[in-house]
Image 1 (cartoon, rainbow, N blue to C red):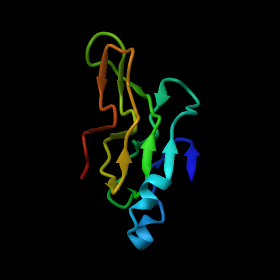
Image 2: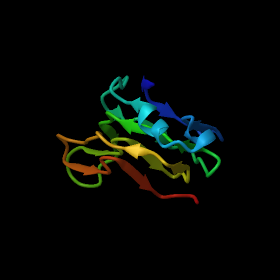
Image 3: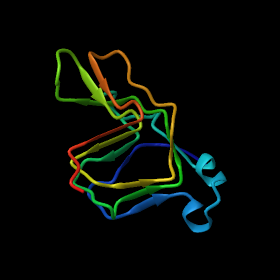
Image 4: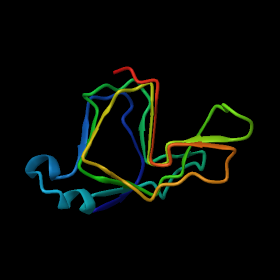
Length: 124
């Protein structure tokens, strides 16, 4: 199915996955989609967040991530900075496997990083 929401792992050791992890059928990847088209706040438009020190026991597997617009981050350069259209990973070492990251974008800002995935300062 299609799930119009955002996911924040909040440091928890959980697995968010499609049926793919049970049978290895890759058709489940396209058939299970998380779309970030309903962001509660325009400055927090990433679809999936790993921002609370997650490690490899926090797993995203076998699904599609789309519709993200990124999250505003502290400016590195002048103007607005935005990162992680689909997935925003900061100070975390989560495990992402067999996912399709597409249809995410960052636009209208001074500096953009990771239209699909932004990952910085891993712990693992």
